[in-house]
Length: 213
Image (tube, rainbow, N blue to C red; front, side, top):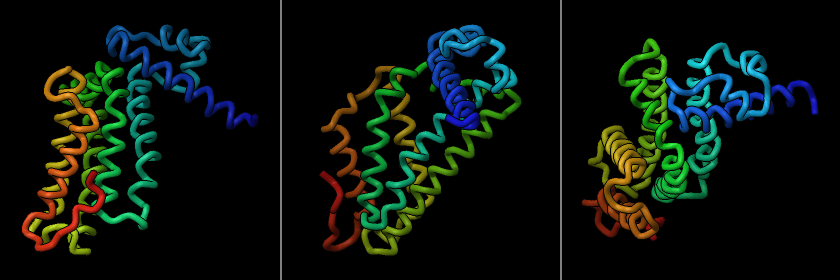
């Protein structure tokens, strides 16, 4: 293993440990000592990679986003799939992550709360804004392709529709973390996918719901 690979591996281990510690104790209760212990390294070693607890908290968020981007990128870029199929695959991925969000629900909610309160000078708020703009743009691009291909109703505003999809997913995610609302199981996901594709295709004669279960 090269020194660069060793550095990246150590950083990954710290981020994974920090994700657990922040979820267990919250930002205020978490300590760099606890993160170091969870990662099996010295406290001083943590500071070799991250300047402060706040920096580590931000980097955990960035790490989670980077992992999601790596997973979703191939789905969004698969030109063998129709726009509708790519959108449904995106929903499949999101649903598959709900168990993770529930396990680390406190951390997810704390990211949102910290951003809303601007407790870190607006840095996390800005990061969340960039994340939402990115994913909204990705979904809007899929919808625009579907409109151009005749899959979706051309009267739809792709950006507004994408924002509605994001709002729906965010709302269900929060309800799932808090144990509220309907159980998001296979039947729920299938019904949601059918409803979304039917809505997007409404007004088109002879439309196909290819991609919906």
